Length: 109
Length: 121
Image 1 (cartoon, chains in turn brown, green):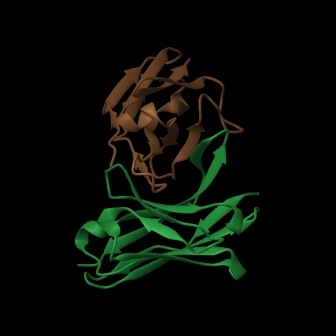
Image 2 (cartoon, chains in turn green, yellow; image 1 turned 45 degrees about the horizontal axis):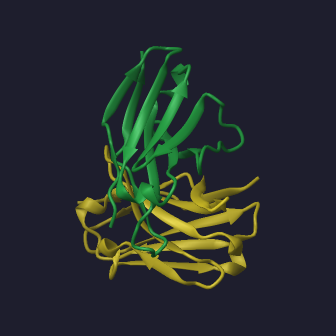
Image 3 (cartoon, helix red, strand yellow; image 1 turned 180 degrees about the vertical axis):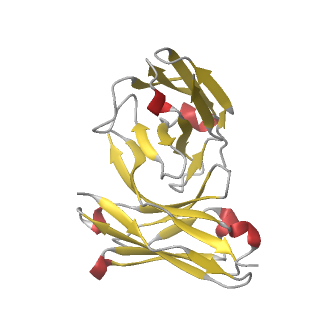
């Protein structure tokens, strides 16, 4: 099965830009999707596909991919963006299974 | 609106089993796969597997094969996740999520609120 690796934690000043990365071999084949999880809440989809936002997700969230690395960028971070962020993609086994990244804690200073 | 509503918190003794339900509304239940994900206290998200509500086909992560069973009842648009022979490290929040697909990409676009399963020992 695949593994997806993320930095454990990053911090960003209010209004500045932060990039969260996710590395794994499956990302050479599949786009990542990204999920925001605030304490005590269920995960929330924020980015999917090449760079698509579900309805209601602010346009300060964007996604990209290069080789085996996917990135989530928050441009102009707000206090409410402080949360854990997880990437995920299809597993390379071909059984429609997925693998989650290890998660990144984003702190807005 | 589209939503998944899960059953309430459960407390179980080690060795027992637990069955969590996930009721879908606002969309055609059989048109979307349902996935199950769990999260132990202070830990990350862990994929468990999926069920196709239309066919009943399911697939589990190898770790859970033999002790998780995913089923559905299409008459009431509800999916179930049954975990047997519980251990203390099965204490976690269990989520169901709908898989959406668009432009060749698939993702989990709707999540249940989570069900906490706690070891009573």
